[in-house]
Amino acid sequence: MCGICGEIRTRGEVRFPEFWTMTRSMQSRGPDAEGVFAHGLEHGSMAFGHRRLAILDQSSTSQQPMIDNELGLGIVFNGCIYNFRDLRAELEGKGYRFFSEGDTEVIIKAYHAWGVECVRRFKGMFAFALWERDSGRVVLVRDRLGIKPLYYTEGDGFFRFASSLPALLAVGGVDRTLDPVALQHFFSFHAAVPAPRTILKGVRKLEPATILTIEPDGTRKTERYWQFTVGERSGDRQLSEQEWAEAVNDAMLAAVDRRRVADVPVGVLLSGGLDSSLIVALLAKLGHGSVRTFSIGFDSVGGQSGDEFYYSDIVARHFGTEHEQIRIDGSEALGVLPDAIRAMSEPMVSHDSVAFYLLSREVAKRVRVVQSGQGADEIFGGYSWYPSFLTTNDATQQYRDSYFDWQQDDLRRLLAEDVEDDHSTAFVESFFARTGATSAVDKALQIDAEIMMVDDPVKRVDNMTMAHGLEARVPFLDHEVVELAARMPSRLKVADGGKYIVKQAARSLLPAEVIDRPKGYFPVPSLRHLRGEFLDYVRDVLNSPAARERGLYRREFVDHMLDNPEAEKSPKGHSRLWQAALLEAWLQEHAI
Image (cartoon, rainbow, N blue to C red):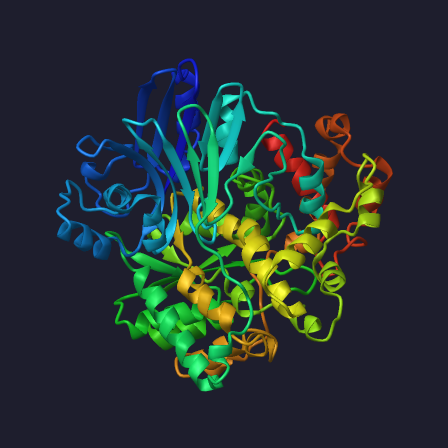
């Protein structure tokens, strides 16, 4: 994994002092090397930058930007193509010659051999920009599930892109005005802002599974190259529960196996929950020797435990992993809050963000690649609100009641600007109307897997791990696993507290105590129960001159929340005070 950026000008020259600033702002994503390539056009110019995290082929032959002069192609690439060796063998059979041993060059040759359709052959996570020397065409691509980010901004005669939103801000010339629709989504959707919007008017993000082609004259076209629909297929209805469980085991075994490809050691972020524990079990089944596992824990607050070491220790002992408990006291979590917020490409309210930031900081000192269990809840129906959709006749209303952190009336109390149209409800209604899913529960699973997951847990893991040059791989988001889960009857997913079929698949692999435990979360109790120094931090953010000058919130409601920090909770029990403070803190950290 790496950081990539680029600028395409239909007239004039790329200004390199600013361009280098954009590239270097992503140093944490790629601490091992840096490179820039510029190319003149008949009526403009373009430049591409790269920060490298060397995981495959650590030699200089895989440095980027990578140029293939024989084919007239160049690329900057972030991610990993897990099946690159199979593709390379196929391409060698076609007569292609290779000068490196990694996956980057395979993308170049695959594009030359099969055109943009090559992306359908890739199994992995990726965001890349590839350009044709002779035509001046540029192609930008994002992976199927949006695991790897790609942001862009545009102005008079230019188009810029980067792996992070702050990298675009570093160059300047970006409209930093808050997008009022995105602002509503931020509060409704637990900080998720669906692509192509971001919280800023001047920055957009490429949607998952999308190819964006830019011609030399600046004209553009987009193509969606993959999609899935949640719902049963007639041909699958004869499958027994046991057959579904075996299919899940087979698909997950293949997904975990693919994500072992690396020229450096691979570890596991072991929370002690079902998902990460299953990854450890499958690695053991594959004969992966000496698995390194890592868990994190915080101080307890308000009677809520801050760690799940009990369960992670069971898994570590059962499989004989090389396990480390990483214990963090509250003061340390508080001390890194500004750094963690600065590492967010977009403001993210989940407490997991700080936990992942601290865990990644420590794990990156030990290994450079980890597998992690994100995505299982959305793909296999693990959240507590899904069963309520089995009996409802109004999927949109049920989704609002179950998922929205703030309803429209709540936002009228909070936001200084008048809240007239309910953009978030309209978004959900529109999505449910056009999706191929038919039942209410399948619609909820579809929007969570296709939209909310991408801009909450997936983005969180990318941002927090890459803040420390750590590559995270997510086998539950293997696209073949997602396709399998999408076809599965919803009852096999949401039953028994959620992820029923994953639990059944795991029974031959994991101790029952881990499978049947109550569902846990990556806890940071101090952010759920704002007290002491954490409350002081929030008060300082919201009372700062920058916040008062911005005037985003109604002062009387801010004062109410500060006086009663636990009075305002979302339906899922999250602190609304923290959500409001987090957005303001992110804006301040990025000088917006």
